[in-house]
Length: 287
Image 1 (tube, one colour):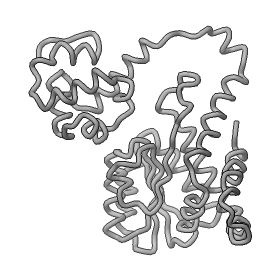
Image 2 (tube, rainbow, N blue to C red):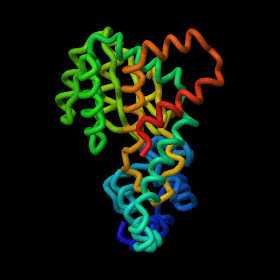
Image 3 (tube, helix red, strand yellow):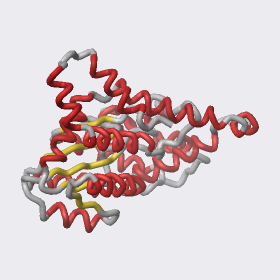
């Protein structure tokens, strides 16, 4: 299409009438809900707009982009340019405000993460012959850090920042192994491929993600969902991985105190106690 606007939303508007009817559903949803759409993966957008993933891709191409991923990145950039500026002196004069905002994001995990689920995940890790920790893109360092630290705890791990390497490693796994897949969107191609290989090997699986309703999480034994309720406090960018690190630390903390925690659960199975335990875990690494 020939017409181009100055932003992604303008491009959609000027080319809207030339789109096919199915494509208009996806375009209309983005125009009506741009801030929500910018945080969605392609599967979520297709479902919310009543279209299909293929339709979303065609719509993106018809308004001048290579695909949804590129359009989403550029739309994020558009929103970044449009954001209001803050009083720089106020920000720089209060480091406490910056750290308190980050601490609030971590503390909010207490509402979404269940201690029993974390204990179940750690039990799988401890019983595994080998743990494969996989992630792609800028989440790869999180996987490498978790794998290295689990090894320091005596849990055999395989991890790599190169997708070809971790895919090959997973393909050599067995049903006695566990895969830990980390993807905020739940749609990282190489991570999904690794999960598919693990399922063929009948491995146990743990998924750390921001989205539960995805192919990645569909067949997982444990889905640890990251709910970033405080992400707008200081205009934090969506590529922050503070919460993934917090979950990694929680898993390592539980592993370190596994015997005591499981014994306490046997001695006192009162449901009300779990909230306090999660708060205790999170307090270990609050900023």
